Image (cartoon, rainbow, N blue to C red; front, top):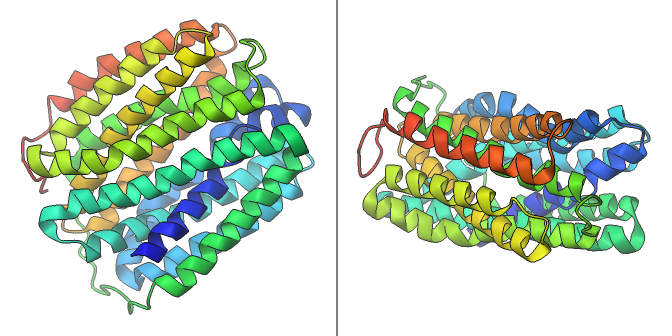
Length: 370
């Protein structure tokens, strides 16, 4: 599965390398504060809508078709970035990139789960999630640096290069796997709803920090584009580093334990982020990243335990991407009347308040079968 992991790394680097520049680039095209926030987070809207249907279709027609189609769509989206001469075109390019992610992610997660043993499935999913999030770590760090030296258009070229590399690795790593299960048994995993709700809330609050608040408030709190890239990247780095241990944790102590611990970490990180000190922001972003990694790995592992894992993983990705879009949009609205530090405190309170509400209704299975 080495080639699949490498492909995933570059796919996520292509998606994330533009994160440090999207809000400011949208503003340079004449966007309002709110529209710049929409541009930052709208790549998650199409996955929120489309991931579940694509997860089902990957069960029916096979994983390879959707993996390759998603990566090819990412190449097309990167080309569209270069043609974005106004805000609407930029938003459209981000939507198309998100549509590619919607095809790719459920299929690649299900493929890795298909190839893993039941007793180590959480750990294997953790390795995949680590690889993907390392791509999310590398992308903003490199993108912010390139933007500061060569400008925004160079970052769009970088996204295109990463997209092509990802597609090539998958072409030679994902074998043809037939047409899947033509008689698909549709079964909604109702027992997963508490986990999906926590994934939505946890992702919304952490993405508010990384995707909008830091890039948007950077001039006001006096941090450069490269510093912004490093701070945002720290979130994705620690999200990546936490995922294999989180998978092992969920295999040994249950999926519920991972979700609770992750939400606590996210809340602590957001409280710590109520500052303008770059070093403290780096630490806070790292803590948020670890929390996000623990929560998401536990939920994906729980989804992979389901009978129809393509569908269940698709729903998990829908919750995740809905949280990304909602978080950026809400942060854009909050920015009209809140200072940066105040926003972080509000987000932290939302995170900690929602944790017990959703977790009270979840089952207590060591391996979360539904």
